[in-house]
Length: 423
Image 1 (cartoon, one colour):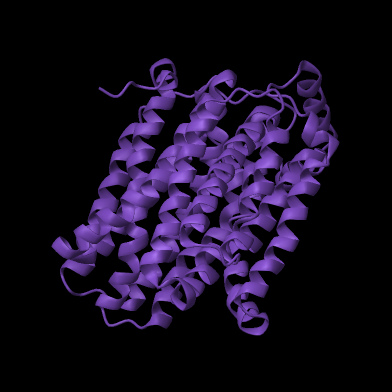
Image 2 (cartoon, one colour):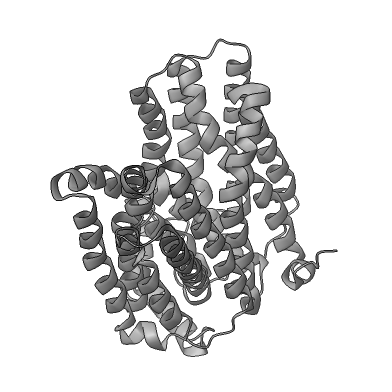
């Protein structure tokens, strides 16, 4: 019998969120595979696949900062609940349209726009909710468990999606995703989070949207470790990860023997990510951002490992090590934000982080192809490393990063109130 992690036993509210979100994340992985297949199944082209993907992505980018402001003004779990209801309806409608053979590309584009808007409100609200349902000494464990689900479903989701598409078509796979959103709604409805602490950054009833957004940006700008961490994370997403999603598959096709070899590397990276989440769950560190910065420097070596010319076994092993490092960074980074940023401004800060990192990642994906055609595959991988590794090491050189403690001090809490009043 698999033992239940203590944080799930002790933090009942987190357990509700974790169960619902675990199923929802699995559904998201299924949808990621099924949606392009759905586009092709209704006669769409490769360009249409990109159009539908952009239809979901661009609204999410445009509304992420709005979602951060709203999540700091209203009850976060209710925003998440409404978002999941909307996404459940969208995926359900897509499934019905596909299963009844009446779906068109225009339907998919329109519904993905709605999905992207709802997604933009969910992410900042979820980031801000964690300190309201988990004790400060259990945040790292809770984030590690959520990271474990994110990592493990990267393997389980596509496998499940493949089986569902064969048995029930893309419509059946999307119907399952809609069902997982419905389950998440049921668990979110049971949440009873603590009220947001009345700190100085709390939006007032008369505050304008731009004023609230500015207050959130001051919370970022006033903390050297926050804006420098966001910058390093953005460089990792924009510069390093395209080596996995764009250049790596091409290099594997040309030099390693094709998709089977690349799947070995990706599987090794996934195993490393899962291992990193387990390590983050068990590790207790007094200077979490110092370890996070060191881990990011290791993760930033992914590109040069792929382009090293080593054997497949060596490359897969080293990519697994970078997977461990990447998971450690993200768990410790999220926990640091949730611990040291005022709860009343946390969603705004998280929305800035999300926009600057994940939001800018498509830019890196779009530039990686032309860069590799101009410079060559391996030269581009080396250039990625030359940019990313020094950026991560630079983060480690920041005194505020190295000295940040695991727990917030009384002095820090007071200073956040002063910052909020000045805004």
